[in-house]
Length: 81
Image (cartoon, rainbow, N blue to C red; front, side):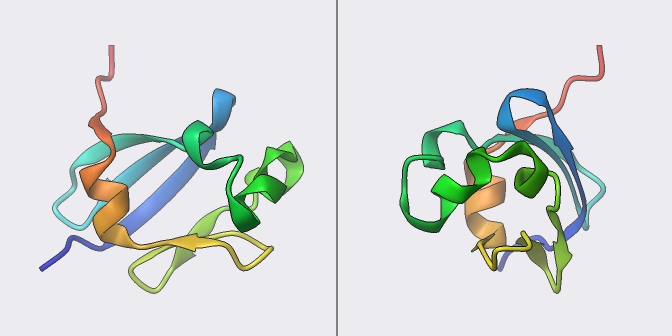
């Protein structure tokens, strides 16, 4: 079973602040994916900032998306300090 994404906020340096259905906040670094397939288009900051919640995960205006399992497993707990 996976945790659904409740909210996403794009940050500088291709970081995403994610909130999951258990209210856990985690930081996901998109940088490693920006040289692969459709994700290359997200180097455009305007396109990167179009990220939004779609069903239980996230997507962008270019139809790129990531599954919630990947987002959770490859993200780090967010430290508010």
